[in-house]
Image (cartoon, rainbow, N blue to C red; front, side, top):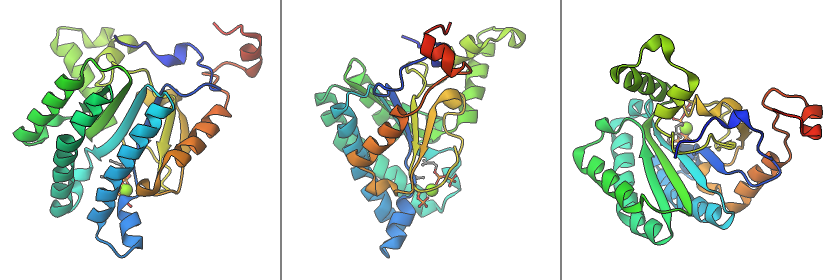
Length: 251
Ligand code: IPE
Ligand code: IPE
Ligand code: MG
């Protein structure tokens, strides 16, 4: 099913967010602070992913989206890039079966054509195995960029014969790589930077943003609860006034 834009209705922010999207940042600095190589931070970061997936299941979150590798991260030193790729492959091999046993659906989104064929194959198999699972959808954004996503959606529409001048928001949304998920309710960035770094540019239009100095390897269930508590203290208005929301007169 494709979700229509969540900005049209007002979800109750007092409830659990349905969709949490996270920029997992600070692995390198976590390691450097301990006089370890940066890669040690990435290895620890994989453990943190496992912890947050479990925490989301316990809290009945339905969609968890994780930024693992951006289209700009190819600019890093070649040895760091190749270690990140190897970690990705190992994590897929080790975790997919466990995810399947826990009724988790796994999706990998991004320009996957740049990955080697063995990795592309492993991704396809993991997605197929877990496709019918319903408890939690975990999306890993790999070689992902928000600008790439919008451009590929436009390209798909126009190459299917759609006149560019008639493209609507709804049409474009339906071709985004995460059209299977509602827009994120809560965005979290760890590691102290307060920027979006070309993550889900379209989908974050009305997402509540939460930034924390905690480095990703240290981010745990308690940290997640702090972010959720902040989210639950907010009023989501999507352009309306507080009074409209209080009266329940929002259209
Ligand atoms: C995030 O941590 C992981 C990836 C981008 C792959 P970083 O590697 O960016 O860590 P810092 O920001 O250098 O500390
Ligand atoms: C963003 O982190 C991408 C991921 C976490 C995968 P970066 O650490 O690469 O972001 P910038 O370059 O500091 O903005
Ligand atoms: Mg970083």
